[in-house]
Amino acid sequence: MTKEEFRTRLAERAGRANAAVSGAVIDALDAYYRLLARWNRTINLTALSLDPLTDEALDRLFIEPLAAAPYIREALDVTPLSVWFDLGSGGGSPAIPLKIAAPQLHLTMVESRSRKAAFLSEAVRALNLGNAEVVNVRFEDLHAPEPAADLVTVRAVRADDSLNTAVAALLNDAGVFAVFGPKPSPGEAWEVIRTVQLLPSAEASQLSLSRRVPRGTNRLTPI
Image 1 (cartoon, rainbow, N blue to C red):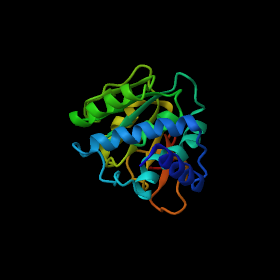
Image 2 (image 1 turned 30 degrees about the vertical axis):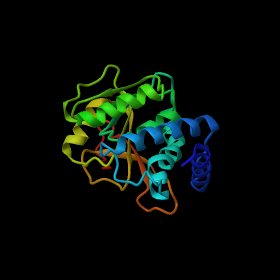
Image 3 (image 1 turned 90 degrees about the vertical axis):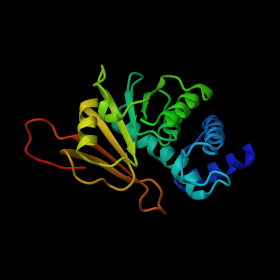
Image 4 (image 1 turned 180 degrees about the vertical axis):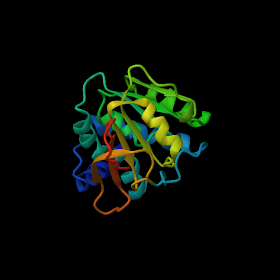
């Protein structure tokens, strides 16, 4: 696929999702796509088809994060100091496309598998992603950051007690927990502030934004 073909298809799919995208963002996403496709030949970064690049892969890996970006910015009231952790980053989506769309966020990608972590580190370097780093550990073993995180994102990570505990330890009191995909099973008490359908044609293409229920309240709203 040529760069022009990628640009045309990405712009067309973004338009279907009402996702604004600039030329500079498309160029950065094209570079990410080519790096991902090259590494995916030897490391299983994604099961989605990259060569040829299917509409499903284009939507899930690129368009969903672009469509999510304005909702996340609105929920965060983003400042240049916003601290963001992406847990189980895998092949880098949604974290890398979202970082390209919202470069002011300080991103830490957490990935336990060393080969995938190596890919993520190369992506940070090759794409010149400022304020981005990779931590090669299990998210359960993370230490609480200082300052505490404003945002935690996950996709395809099992929603269980270990995830809820890790997210609660990372986030500050006003922090946002953003889950890509179907609404997860109930766990620790969270207050859902918004649920968004990112792609009109894909029922599972959702974004759920939550905050912890404030201390001292009796109302429990699980994610």
